[in-house]
Image (cartoon, rainbow, N blue to C red; front, side, top):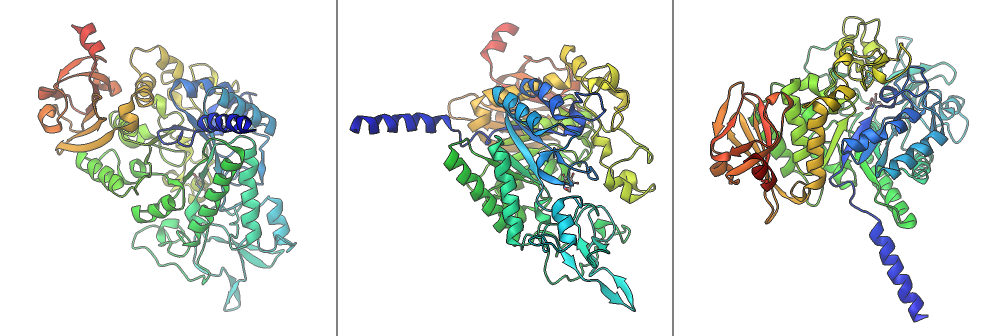
Length: 572
Ligand code: NOJ
């Protein structure tokens, strides 16, 4: 008996060891926008089978997790963020069986699978909403319904709240005789989280996909989940945008309400309980909220890893080394004890990294995202430097662009960053066998494509891969300390150190002119180092030996330096 207990303890220990609770801490998360990644059936729309067929690429570039933008049943008004069934796959993308195959292929490649979880709203085509209109229990209060305000005998929305996609956030429903609230499109009614049945139903959704092997969630628009019950008008912002533009109001009553964090905590617990019961690897939660540092802390405390959007919201092509240092320090100093940072370089809602920063500076951002400690989050296509495609008003399909009208669509449309992935120079860039794709392929695909970059001696792809290889394999990048130092107003150094190991130094010259700096004395790095990688247009050879006492950095050039006996011997 005693022996059996002993054996059990040993077996349990072996089992526990096999479970990873920290796989996400230095993960490279690769966001896949399913509609645009790879079309397997020639209908011009990406799908799950297409994704599965390209998972080897994700593995090759050194990512260890994929985040899939929504794949669920949807009328596609907001391309999947309007969900008509939270527990099924949209026929455009395949079936649940295809999803199972995708997960099993991902697991076989050692890739974690993170799904988009969209709690704020469903589609107006969801059966819950249809029943809510008819006041069928328990769905009557599943959504936010309000009576009209009658002014001079005329029906009006309850207040001035606006939709993120322009216009009133209230839509009249004749059948129910009330307005419903939608923070996003008219076809995306907001769920009512003050109703316990909604909380339960959405928790079940999380469990459903965990049972299918999902390793975590990216939680969509989380700071929009609650609204102040007093329904007060929101104050006008002091800006020149039109009255129906979301940015015209200060959203003090419709975003960042305190109850949000309680719900998030309950989801954290649900996932942790699942891990304990089923003895799985940790389940990761990353939250999407474009908020300030103070509010970000609430999301950490509630058990998620809030997206760090500094490379999107606070910095751009015009930012100086001083700006970069200030933002990075501010983030790191405010990181709660024991929490892990993340670095988002782009996503499907923002213009392409290379278009926001230009080719040279976008490489710098990727270098920072890989060299700084924590999680790197990359949007598909950025690993080959894809750029925005200009689309006419007639070609525009994104609801945010469409609602803004022909004069302003280009300010709001997210289509430019969502065009199909450029795999090669064949029909539709190898994305689809169809000449017609849901969004047109960028005309530069004949030159800018993965296949070409794989054979080119120097390319965005090779540069990206070099960085992920370093991040994955060098313990200094995984566990070392970090120092971010300004050498002068244009030159930034990021030094990672780990006890006796040789440091890794990222040196960035953001000036339009060449500089020579004494990084050896100023940053206390070894005098003899070699170039591990440099930005694609730098013309600096990998393995070049440098004297950091007189480190020459050409205009807009950045280099990652390591100490490498190997390079020293092969170069001498
Ligand atoms: C944020 C998503 O990233 C975006 O694409 C979507 O339109 C809104 N949330 C609404 O779900």
